[in-house]
Length: 165
Image (cartoon, rainbow, N blue to C red; front, side, top):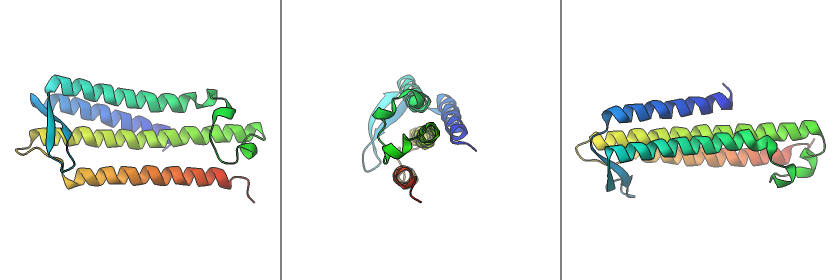
């Protein structure tokens, strides 16, 4: 499946999780958790749903828009290793832009998946007798951070190694 489809699937999953939250959230919702995983701020159901909708839509629009507008950014404004090599032919420029779009779509999909986990974790915590985030949620955050770091390092090395035969 292409990165664009993964991104669209992650946005759809977030939307489905939001609908589920709209059905399942109680009137009092934990909206912030301390490092220990315990709730340190609460909100009303409507306020929490509005905040989750704005966050999901905003992040999706920002990352989707950045990927879509990548072709319009002047090459001089792109920060990439071996820019001289990439700029040497129109085909290389097109490939650089394609890779940039793919990278933003992959990171966008991972970010939307993390936001979906946050939303579902909030629903779970709100419905629990003792609301808190568990170890599974913290592990998901760690997986997200490691994934994004590995992807960025890999993309940087890929761009730097281009043309070295």
